[in-house]
Amino acid sequence: MSIEGIAIVLVAALAGALIAAFAMHSVGTKRAVDAEPSGRSVESELVAASLTELARRVDTVAKGQADSQMQLSEQLRAVADGNAALLRDTSRLAEALNHTGQRGRWGEVQLRRIVEVAGLTRGVHFTEQLRVVGEDSTIKPDMVVTLSDDRSIVIDAKVPLDALLSQPSGAPESFASSGPSAAEVAARHASAVGAHIDQLASKGYWRQFTNAPEFVVLFLPAESLLGQALSSDPGLLERAFSRNVVLATPTTLLALLRTISLGWRDRDIAENAAAIHESGRELHDRLRAMTGHLVKLGSSLGAAADNYNKLVGSYEARVLVSARRMADLGVAQDPIESPQQVDRLIRQSSGVALTGTQPQ
Image (cartoon, helix red, strand yellow):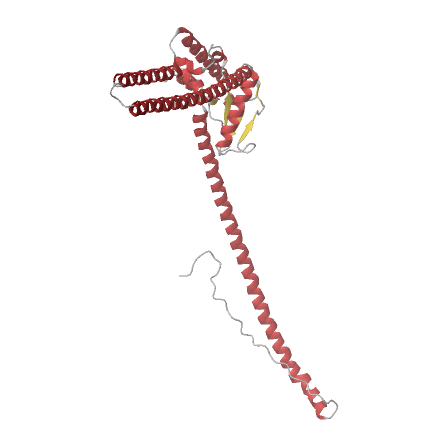
């Protein structure tokens, strides 16, 4: 209810209360002949109390309305400030998008973000602004994505906004409205997209790369750019496919790049499996060589033990006999201890031979 309506209700209530009080006073006057002075005093007090309560309520409502009016004014002021800021930001954005160079950089930034979100790494899985010198001309696509099988997909970002920015409203959503102006702007936008299709098809990017798929991706950085073009010219997709051009929006391009990322992941897994297999083979060869050295060392230790035992036997039979005789003759006082022979028994390993087969 508006403030004026509330004021009217309050005035009507006040008038009704006054009329009721006047009626009660008239009735009291007619009964004054028979009524006692104390009765008139009670009725006057009741009327006065009613008028006081009514005045208090009116004052409370008036204060509440004043507070509400103040809050509403503050909210309206905040909304006005927000609209002004939004208008300034929109004007700056429209001014920036009116420059072809700014639109191109915006499209390239959007393309890079989507590629990075898909899990691809710059310099490894994709290259930006790659300059390729061909037989007839030099090309410089916005991005070249390398597949896991070393083939390449060329992506070029386009931002056809001239037709959209020429609208008085400046909003692409106004395509949905009926009227010749909206239909004309939609047709101009579809024609701009078609011109980009023909331009990319004429460059033949795929011919400049080895084993590249015979198509180029035309990236539109907003879903509405493709949707509005197709609403005016539904044959754009078929036209693009027939000329080896794939129209992609952020959603469809992300799906394509995710598939490419999975291909790289599978390749990494396969390479890791091959590396693990090669490391296992090298470890097996080294263990086999080390086992051979241990066997040779055991044989050498056995031969050394035999030679040592022969030396001990010869020493005891030829040298210690003379030494003991000298001790018997009183030449030496301390006896010479006899060396002990070494047990040649070598413990055989119970391990499996490293031949790559398991024991039966």
